Image (cartoon, rainbow, N blue to C red; front, side, top):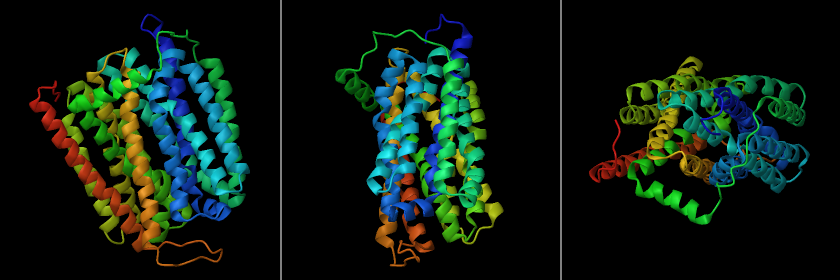
Length: 421
């Protein structure tokens, strides 16, 4: 994409990436909605089930930097159409698979296919829209993506309970095929930029820039603090936690859990735009970190919360998680057009790898704390105490990483590395 093209090209490119981001988000959270069925079908422990989330996220993270370069070189249309095909292959493998390794590989395909979605939105927004509206378009892409789980969660659970999980996932594949044909028609074709290359020296240089520029490194760490609670709770363990700890029916638990996306969708559209307009980044990030810690404390240790209270807590958690966009937007002030795709990919890699590690840690701790209970099929059952113990790791790590990021940022300020407000 270049700025000499008609503005409509940028809008179509951004819109295509945003709606693919919505679709891949539905695929991302779907295992959390069918946790009992998947664990039964593939006979998984909690640690095994966590791999369906963490493998997706690890591959997603590893592919961020190559995706940034591929988008720079090939354009968004070619990359997004190929990515949808990879997602469809992965979803088909999950439907037809019968062993744990097949399920894990299917999620790796989906993670690889999903990798370009958000970095593509960030790239198009950073290169084609003025700084006064850049944060708005970055946040709007997140808002559109987060509508995926909000729209799909309840219908998917009803469909699963009335038919079976394989049929529900076949419906998701059909939607993906329709999306592919729609994007073939509406997205603009772009020239190949042969000047963009994927060289190891360029990758290491971009990674080194993140470490050398202390504020950027701090923002990269903070993206993990904001994204990991959302990914652990909304993408994988939230529904099971609410069912076992608050004794909610699964349909209600799914509906309540997805309220985290209501908060993220609303604030993802408004907060980055307001903070861009008034140049109010760091204080908003700091406030959101405190808010995230408070929400986790309330959810885990607040006692027998009502459904209404849970909805409020999860909406607030979603609001605070959207400050991840502020971190991307603030970090983009330290990049150029030539390096923005790769640099944003590096920062997103930090966010996703950190979140994937925390996601896997929760499953590991659930198995460590398991009391030996089994259901009628011989699968491990985890009680309220096990979930509180495992999910407390998210709270502890958010606190630790926030403090680390704060001290790194202050060190960068002492070195006069272009502090922003």
